[in-house]
Image (cartoon, rainbow, N blue to C red; front, side, top):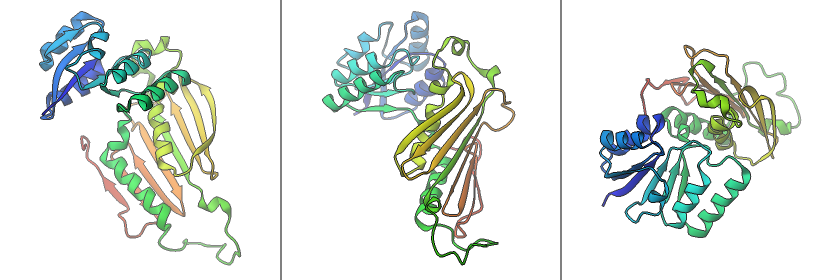
Length: 290
């Protein structure tokens, strides 16, 4: 039996990713599409074969023929839709960010716990094949450490271990190009620090096995900023964003150092490492993999 789905928000993201994925799935039936702009809803129904279209999201969250909502609206419309759907027994897959405030986040979590109905946030970078290989190597390094001693080891005679030697250092660099942004970002108070960086905050937490304890930030929430997350074990993750880069150069670089192993993921296309002799130095993932 197929899962009955509806998509709310029929903009570029829905039409470029979620709607074609649903249309190509043997396990999902696209029962409805919804957009506040009727022409967008009508076009999406026509393009992707939806059973019907709506312009009021309440017609979706209150429907009895929907099992799953894929929420692709702007982040200003999140909590209200999600909570209504959960209370009606409809699972939700929402684009990031989950909420625009801590109070909205708390309400969503409370309704989820009250109803037991699933809600999932689209932090899709965890699922790229290259990222999964990167994470595998980080986990292996955390358990095993470097396979051999350093090329030059001036501290081999030391009598103790520094506490910092058990920490993880994570660097995430985002090369962004303001010329590619959509016009709405200029009126969005939250800026890229919320709309886009939640991807990388999620990854920083995923790559570390200690709980976060402090957060620092410097720069503009619109772009050109640095965030530092400090963890309970003293580990640190630094996320740096530039809006004045060029998209002819790879956008995302991830680097983790721990237990004398260095692991790098370059734009989800190449993983490199040094310190794990049993693993390849370089593994490539052709464009389009995953």
